[in-house]
Amino acid sequence: IEIDDSCQDALSLSTAQMLALNKNTEYKLAAVIGPYCANQLENITKVLAEGNVTQIIPVPVEKSVVDSKLGGLIALPLVKEQMAQAFFDFINAHFEGAKAALIYDEENAAIARQVKGVFAKNGKQESLFSYAFEDYRFDYDEIMKDVLQNKTEAALILGKAKNVGRMAEALKSHRRD
Image (cartoon, rainbow, N blue to C red; front, side, top):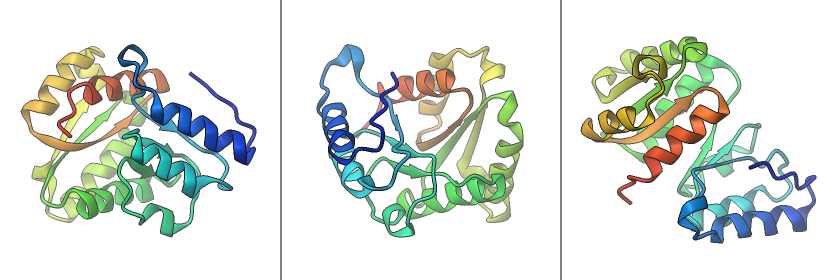
């Protein structure tokens, strides 16, 4: 679903609160992409973290927000090389020694190569498992089975919004924490 809060402080925060409190299993959120405005970012991030909602922030934010150690917060820069390094750094900071999944579509193969390169450059290629949507014919359950079998603790999903959402939903339905 798409909710436009027009960057109004009260509406932005109350929207986040409603999303975080949603307990309906049929309409459980896989992730929230946003906010696109920073005026209530810190409060919104806290509310969504308390609600165990994964949050992807697609715009530049203060480094202190990214370093806040709140669960479920992912901030991605816009440059491929920076995104790859940011994912590697995130894994090392929050899941040290854990295995990570890289799930992507053909359109994002260049970014996937960058991520694989950063892991290899740092001697951690054995802790990164890659899954291309096309190799699985977009069968989210099959990808999820392999991700779980490899005991990964975090995933970077790259692709069209519909595919990312469905994959995140499949993974979240089997989340261990």
